[in-house]
Length: 219
Image (cartoon, rainbow, N blue to C red; front, side, top):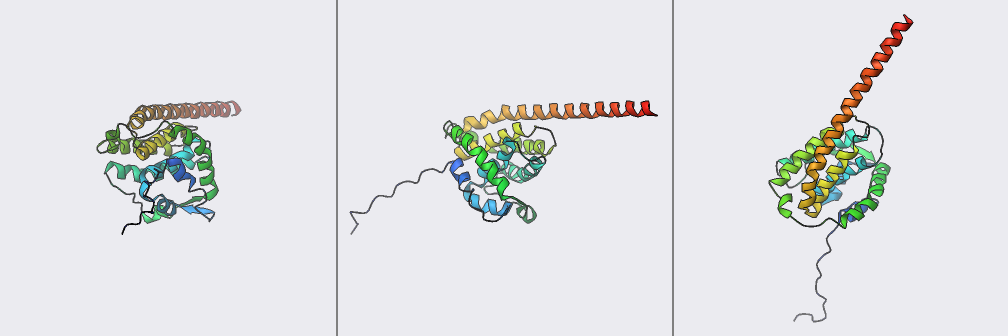
């Protein structure tokens, strides 16, 4: 006989990106965290949350050179999105890479307040834009932005970092409009990077000419 007093099973509340990231704050007891450990904690939300986790440190001021590391780590999930894989695979050597637990916590804590505000405006809509074949296009965009992040461009990590974060949120929350918005954001990011590269080359050339002039004046 059925138990009349048993309470009905309630549907689980959908886990938000901010809640999933907040759960990572105290998930790692060691001072160093490996990429493999992070993937194990992300579980079924690996693609979206991994991209979000890799993008967040580039959305705030960070240690020079850190964007290059996160850009390299973005390549594998971006390529797997392009080929339509359902889970993230990384070579054993890359899974063994480690980052500082404190740096990870700082990036998450710095991004959580903004992320929580953004989530109020993000939700399932135009979901066909976050399904194949559009996810392959998002993977291609992410791959391009990963290469942009690898470049040592001063302050050039912010626009691509924010764009990859938008793509990650779109995938996590099934928000097609946000996915669509990420395309012009990506174009702007590449434009900013190109301008940064040109400015950098011009500055190096100018410094070279100044040094050459100083050397000629001395000798």
